[in-house]
Each structure stands twice: as C-alpha cells, then as structure tokens.
Length: 202
Picture 1 (tube, one colour):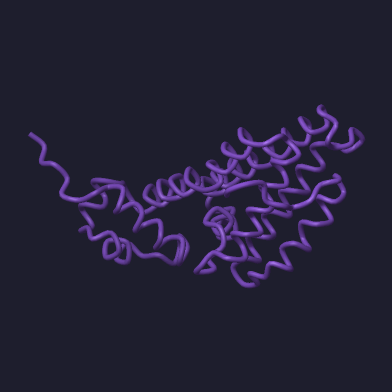
Picture 2 (cartoon, one colour):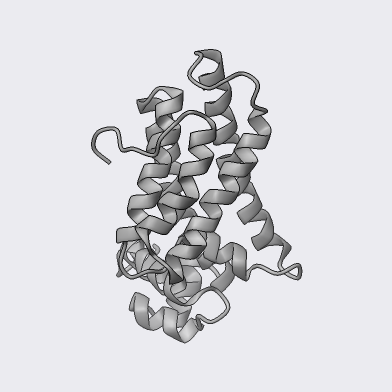
C-alpha cells in the first residue's frame, strides 16, 4: 500500500512558484526549490517531476489564478467595450501597486525563453495568443453593438493592445509608475473612443 504524502502539494507548488517568479527559471536551482518547498529532492521528483515539469506546473497555476481568471471574469461580467476598459484599468492598478515589483510571471518567462527552449516558447506563445484572441473578440463584439467604430480592423487593434499589455508588464518590473502606464494605455483606448476606468470591484 502506497504511503500518503507527508506534505501539502498546493503549498509546496505555491512555494516553488514564488521562487521561480522571483528568480526566473534558469537562475533557480533545485536546491533552492527543495529548501523553499520543504522537500527532499527525491520527494520533489516523485511529486512534481523534474525542474522543468515543476516550472510548467507553477506557471500553469499562476495563469489560472491571474490572466485566465481575469479574462473569464471580465469577459463574462462586462459589456465588450467596458470589458476592454476594465482589463486595462486593472492592469494599471496592478502594475502600479503590486509588491514586490516582479512583473508578470508569463512575461518574465517570455523574456527568458530562448530559441533553444521551444517548449517554453510554445507555452508562452499559447497564452499570449489567447490574450490577443480575447482582445479581438471584445473589439468585434463592441463593433457589433456599436460601441466601437466598425472601420477599425479588429485583428490590428488586438495586436496593438497585446503589445501595450506586454510592454506595461515589462515596465512594471523596473518603472512601476501609474502615470507611465496611463500614458501607454490612454492613446490606444482613446483611438477606440474608450477610457481606462474601473467598473466596480476588481
């Protein structure tokens, strides 16, 4: 009969996530992970696999609780144009107020991923594509209800918004200035006749 695990897997994964998020994948050693998670190296491997598998689980958990949660909540809770405003208003708030200033784990991973690491590049590409598609859906839906002008190309707008979001999350690591974020977002949303204002609790 298999012995039950003597640790909480969710707590251990959260500790690994914090370590990876603070230092990055390459700079984080297995020794640092075992110390943070309170596990021996055999226990880590038995529960989560190798360092790469652990990192991918940590990134997936991070995305479930951050970007994916935001997309689902905002898309289901607001009219399309308001959803765009809400998304970027929340991005401004998070970038300006979150401590410590580590930026976004996904964008940090994008900056670290190299052509020699196609698996990591593919994981990042998938998530950024989902975000671009989210923007595209909102623009098309807002055009359909008349809240965004129909002459805009939805795919072009989505690509622009993706670039702004990624840029803000990079800046959040080193220049977490609200005015800078607002200045980045204001012209893009203004082009669509929108403003970056919060709509209700976030």
